[in-house]
Figure (cartoon, rainbow, N blue to C red):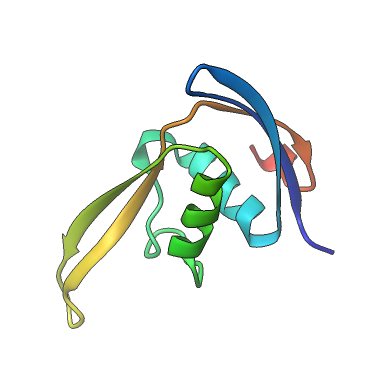
Length: 98
């Protein structure tokens, strides 16, 4: 059974309610919990963060992408995603974690 999460949000002056399922619900919950710290694939391992963010943006949520450099044996860049749309978790399978 896929996780389900319902949220209430206000974007562009309009309020709405959305339901996210599966990994999209997980990603949205991680973004909501993380606040201004945001999430990276390093701090919140998930196989397809860019896909989760893309789909959530299509649903009307504002999510900022901040590119950061990292060192180490596989030095390069990674994205930090920060949810900019204020959301209220209404309920769902994972709502008690929020």
